Image (cartoon, rainbow, N blue to C red):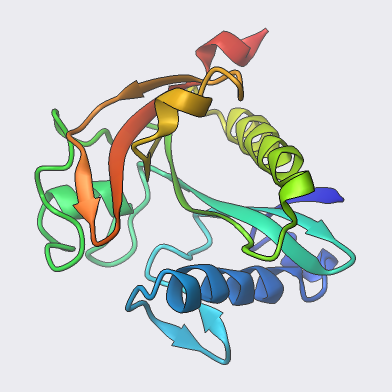
Length: 196
């Protein structure tokens, strides 16, 4: 298994990896979760897949096992910034409620958003924990290299059960959100403790 953080600057060095990541996102979010998201040529994408973002991929011989998108909270592309902020200001009101955060969404160079987090449904249970650990490790390493001291994201509300196991300092920063058959919550992941 390998970990790779992709950017528009290095996509050419990794062959089909980015396209495979978007294909795996389609399988996870559109096929498995049945979310009504944009897709084309078998790939899921949205307005936040811009040169400002980075994509963490856990892969094995071209097969995508897991992935995460990282976007700076200072991002700007047309009317969009990043998913959590755009939801809060009402741009995504049909899919994510505006009252998802207790406070105003940050716009700070050292805060990045983690989104489109998934572990491929085909990953065997015997290695899922290892894949998840690799994903969190690469997310943390990449975010730190990008200058982040904090990540924010919407994750399963079960995060208190696994946060310590993953050695993450996570705090809830919004109310529980009910999405069809799951409950999620906005969280903040403190990376400052990992600076040394």
